Each structure stands twice: as C-alpha cells, then as structure tokens.
Image (cartoon, rainbow, N blue to C red; front, side, top):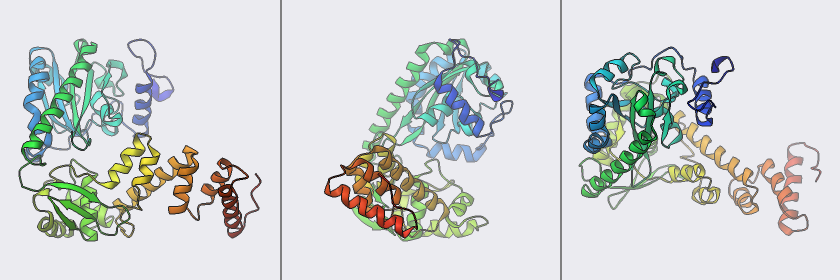
Amino acid sequence: MFLTGQPPASPGGDLRDVVKRSWLRSVEARVDPDGNPPVILADADLAAYRAGHPLATVMGVLRQLVGAPADDGEHLMAVSDAAGRLLWVEGHRGERRRAEAMNFVEGAAWDEDHAGTNAPGTALALDRAVQIFSAEHFRHPVQEWTCAAAPIHDPATGQMLGVIDVTGGDVVAHPHSLALVQAAARAAEAELGWHRDRKTGLWLPGGVVPDRLELLGRDEGLLHLGGRRVRLNRRHSEVVFLLLTHPPGMSGEQLADALYGDFADPATVRVEMTRLRRVIGDLLESRPYRLACPVPTDYLEVAAALHRGDTGAALDGYVGPLLPRSEAPGVITRRRWLEAQLRSAVLAASDPHLLLGWAERFGFDDLALWERLVTVLPAGSASGALAAVRVAELRADYGLSPMSR
C-alpha cells in the first residue's frame, strides 16, 4: 500500500501523477484510509445554507444535464460548496443507499483533508476537472466507485463556488463522464452570469452592488459599494476580509478565533456583526456569517497573479502589506503568506527589474535580495555597483564577512 511505500493501482497500471500528489496530500492531512468523512451540516442548518448559496440558482440546469441521467442510470450527481461540503446528492435510489455507507451524503465534508483523494475534493484542490478511478481513491470504502468532477466559478470574479460531481460504478469510468461534468460546469457558470445581470451584481436581492475592496497598504479598508466609497474601520475591514477568504461562511466561534485568538467570546463578534450590517447592509448575511456575493479585492488579485505565475502583475498590484496594523491572527497569517509568496516569486524570477522593484519598495534591508541582484546584474553596470555597495553595508550591519563574487 501507499502508506507503506507502495503506490495505488490505476486503470492503466501506472500511477498517475495527479493521484500520487493527491495521496501525498491525504497522508499529510492524516486522513484515515478506513474511516469516513464527517457530516458538517445537517437538518435546518443545511437547508438554510443551501437556500442562500449561489449554486442554488443553477440547480435546475445541473439537474437537467446531470441529474436526469443519474436518475435513469446507476450513479449519482453531487454538488458541493468551495469547502467540499456536499450540498446536494441526487440520483439512483439504490446507489444513494450504497453511498450512505461511506458518508457520501448531503452535509458531509469531501475535501481532501477530510475524505482523501476523490474527484470533488481533488477538483477543489487543483481548481480543474478530474476523474478518479476506483483504486485511485485514498480511502478503502470508496474504492468500489469511480467519480468525475469539475469546479464551478463565479463568472464575474473567477472565484470558485463549488464543484459538480458524478459518482457511480464502471459506467462513470468512461471519458464521457468527465466531459459531462465539464459541460455542466460551463452551463452553470453561464446561468450564474445571466442571474447576476438580472440582479445588478448580486446573487441574492438586496440592492447592494459591491465593486471592489482595497485592503493592501491600508490600515482601514476602502469598499466601493454601488457607486459609494465606504471606509471601513479596522475591525470591520478584518471581518470583511476573513469572510471574503471563506466563501462558505464562518461561525461566530470561527470568526472570534480568527479575530481575537483562542478563547474569545463569540458574543463580541455578534456585536460587531450588528454594527457592520449597518454599514454594508445586505452584503452581510448570517448563519453562518458570509458575504452575499463575491467582492473583487486587491488582495485576491495579487494572489491570483501569483497563482498563474505572473510575478510582474502581482508586484504591480502589491501596494503594501495586507492591513499592516491588524493584530487579528487570521489576518496576520494571510498577510505573511502573501508577502512571503511574492518575495519568493521575485527571487525565483531572476529578473533584475522585478528584483529592483521589490528592493526599492519593500526590500531595502533584505540582504538575500541584494545578493541576488549582485549575481544577475552586469558587474560593470551602475546598478550592479550600487547593489554591491548595499550588500557590503548590510553584511557589515549584520557582522558578516564581505561577499565574494
């Protein structure tokens, strides 16, 4: 077995790289290969969350394209949110009963951290369509099944909203299953765009049109909302940012931990939510706390540029650290992550213009950066000479011996 050094089998006999990487992530997450994922949402909580989710508006399209064949055949259609929680599981009655044995049920968490390698979870992890065949599943109870899944995105912002999945026996192993979910995802995105146009930018009615949120290099966020410029205080900026990076929503306890640290009182969050709702109105929803629709923001734009490997665009968009004076643990973690990712990308690019851009704006005391510049700039150039001078200054400040070139 993979857990003892032997990889899983695959239909062609060779381990696919996409499966190998997913199994490694599953091992790192300490997924129990014999266990089942937990049910996170149930009963009234599940019903309320589904009713307010953007994908609720496209379930008719998904049922027509995927659900009807699932009812007729011996397989299932499942739709999850961006956190991997199954919101709808529909299809063949007998197959649904079989799926219950492995907790493939509405409200269960099927992201890779909870369920190991599987099509919905791996599609979320990679943000692309995938097909996982029987023995490629990480957990033993799922290895009788084959599944194919594709992510569904907000057509305006590109933000992932969830996945559409088809799960069943040998019939799902055909390549047409992957093509089916990909086509269904594109149709859902087109439907979402149509609904967005009808409702002036909101998935749900309320009259609020969020245009953009600026958080980088600012102690207080600036929200462009329906033609207005709304300045958020520091706490409200932190709350909106945290909800922005958790599209499925957060409980009061989760928000309290992210804002104040361990053992914080969720009652404090409730007070802040009441105040924030007076500022941004219907953009804020509850049970769980979440934003009614995606909001474009400079933070996510920089992160997206880094994800697609466009370091120049990321550096251009990075005007400063995320809410630099914030002491909220959830903000500090994201602030450090973005800065570290951007600095690493600049160093790896070996582009003198990018290196100089970072050095002049954010890395004047960054010895590693200046040493990198010395190696990429022509030795006889003026900029190369200046970089060498700065390296000598920093090494002297740090009590290090001069750099040998």
